[in-house]
Image 1: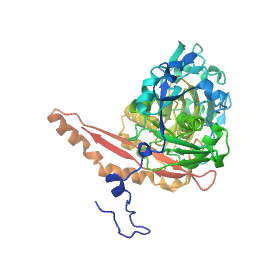
Image 2: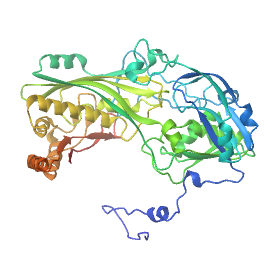
Image 3: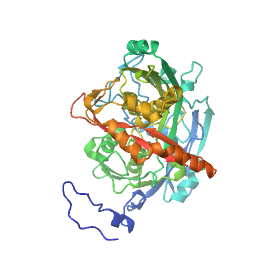
Image 4: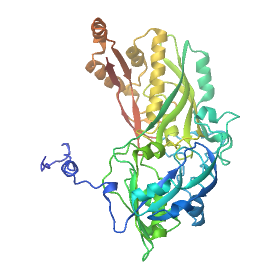
Length: 495
């Protein structure tokens, strides 16, 4: 393969120029970083979803061959390692700004190594640093931890029950965010006079990114200057990681340098700050030697931030002709062991009405901590879950009214002439011809020819199905009440 030398310009395709280097082994990823006198770290992780740490004894591990340090939460606290500054909160426009209900948003503290309690399986409890990975792994098995298992809760619905175990003193009842948007009274009035109402109770399950390259980092410290260097593959960019790392370490930002070379996949799981970033830098300062952590795939499954996990109850009201009158529901986000991000909940709430002309709507949004890995923005940050809910409601309504799902959508799509269009939940779409986009997809998919294809498949003993969904997403707008819409229907046939 040869690198392209074709000139490009405005309106022309931009040729990829990185492929030749990557495909011929010229990439530089986390595990390619090798520094002089480099040491290796292995983390001891909790096997319990919820437990009290009664004692962490690293004496036997410290005596093992090649071991340089065994560090615990008590050590980190003694060195005044601060909490990770996740700062979960409500984003600014173009994301909708919901109203605060019962409580102001609560951020639970997230220290890189816990001192007294673990709150999910895979949470790091101790770090062993040795001359080699093998020596660190062997010594990690010698760390003795006295756990007192505690009652655990893994589903957000269960976490809000009165009898659920209390996970954080800072979050009474395990509730960290409770917001609402839309017009509750007008929505209730529209439902009261509706000819048809359909309801959906559903849950979007958890997912994890599983990037090709597991999180692998190297930290270095220069005792002459007091400066730290972290080599990492962060999807959020080096600037934010640098500021967060400086805050956890308790040093000025100009003493921290973050370097990111090639990154083997992201999907959003790398976008926020991880405990290992700070722990490696801290260990490098204590040892005055570089420290590398090579993440194993099993560790990624246990400790990578995850996405989705949204429980929804929603209803759609229609008149006798199938016109949408109102939409309402409750979205409950599973935040995991630490309240890291409220963005997916907030972003999804604003798009619950999708590209349909729905006069009024009301939604409540809540988020609960549980004994699971924390959830963060992942591949569109809460919008796919919202779109799934409204599209399923439309299909349920089509079944109830004995209408073609495409026809029901056609009757209710926002027309191009109505743009810019303010949806009932507080977001303005500035452009988009949704009916034309849907008709184009229906034609490309031969929607009307599907019955014949289904019959032909049944003659061969096969089952064939078809589905239709519209989608919209917002990006940053030019002013507070505007949002650029990226939308279009998707039709999919399977057999």
